[in-house]
Image (tube, rainbow, N blue to C red; front, top):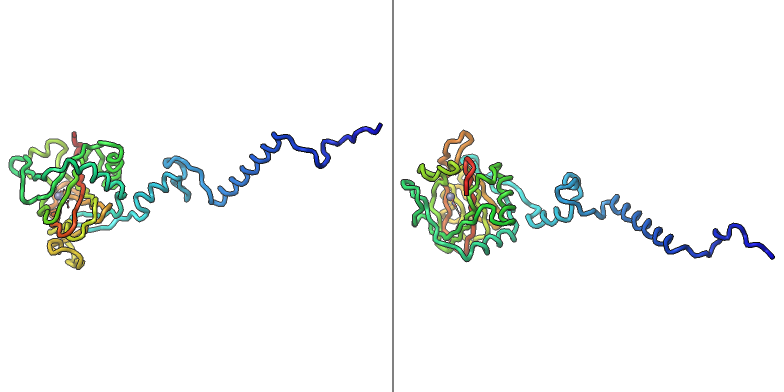
Amino acid sequence: MARPPRHSRMLPGRRSSPFTLILAALLTVSVVLLMLLALGIFSLPVDSDGPAKHGPRRSIREKKNAVEHGENQWTEVISWEPRAFLYHNFMSQKECEYLIELAKPHMQKSTVVDSVTGRSKDSRVRTSAGMFLRRGQDKIIRTIEKRIADFSFIPMEHGEGLQVLHYEVGQKYEPHFDYFMDEFNTKNGGQRIATLLMYLSDVEEGGETVFPSAKFNGSSSPELSECAKKGLSVKPKMGDALLFWSMKPDASLDPSSLHGGCPVIAGNKWSATKWMRVHEYRT
Ligand code: PD2
Ligand code: ZN
């Protein structure tokens, strides 16, 4: 009887075991993935604090954040006297809408600080409605406050709670200083050193922030209201934030920081203010 050939295991046509097939499939998938990674077509999701931050590839979370906050975040120098900068697309539309919805049910007529007694009082100088949020109130607010600290170089602990403001047609905030003239209000945290004003909505007409004592070349855009033409002005745009300093780098008060909110002529204006102190502010 003829014996079976010695190398029958190697003969073509013999079936591979399921284990070999699975191994081969896994190997093929790994090779394809490695090739895609090498070509940069596909990237692994890594934590945004991980190494991908420093390379050309970004994690899915980083890309989402970039889209939400607008890839086009940029800084415009508004003036050096006073020191004022406009951070374009500082906040996402979602964040703006979140602050408005949070504040809406609690709005009350705004007040001003009496320069003699230091107490809040009703005034025709400021006709908006507003409400204070607690510092670090929730995750979204903490994220915004962390961003404010990063952009202003002033620690979060120096900030007062955010104040959300609403102006209807005709409502305004006459030119004023954000720093205090009384001794009472500086006991906690010292003087107000800087303000970050966030525009939570666009305004059809009016509502500009005006600096009547700023040094500037006097040219102004035709789309500004008459009030805004009386100084250096910023037109509100949803998501933009205006940082200006009430004190000079030598820690003296800066009178050129005089500023106001022009009357709204058409539409509605929503803004949020973060006042920052020289020292830590206890809430
Ligand atoms: O909401 C404004 O435009 C505005 C203008 C001036 C707010 C403040 N000041 C403020 O909150 O101090
Ligand atoms: Zn102000």
